[in-house]
Length: 148
Image (cartoon, rainbow, N blue to C red; front, side):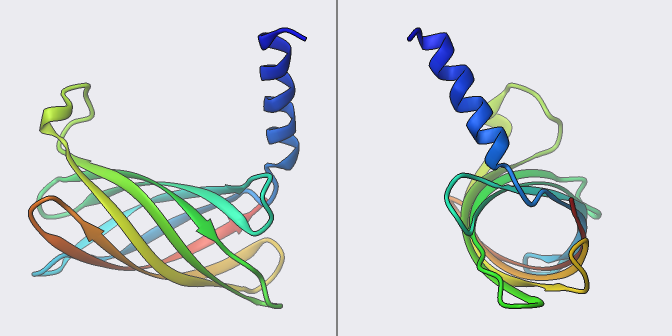
């Protein structure tokens, strides 16, 4: 079996297991003093049960700072309540470019929950701790999510 065939099989398996796609709009407060942020979040399940990958893009209103992050979430579901913990990384920037010296990278960990109103709609509450090289920040957010 060639490397190409193995790669295609792995991609098909991942796509077959990419269940529970969730897409949502988020907003909240970040930093001290707190500034408002808003953005989009998307996540999907992977081969490992109860583990999801999440990608977010946000913009802070006062300083025109953008943020992109990725995280792994462990999220079991108990009826209409789905708590989770997450660990991930991201970067803040003014303009999206390939000059990575202009980015402020961070790691994060956090927790939260989804309250499922139906199999297709949920509300999310979230608390994340962001660790930059020079400072630590706290992010509190909420969101509305659709599950496909």
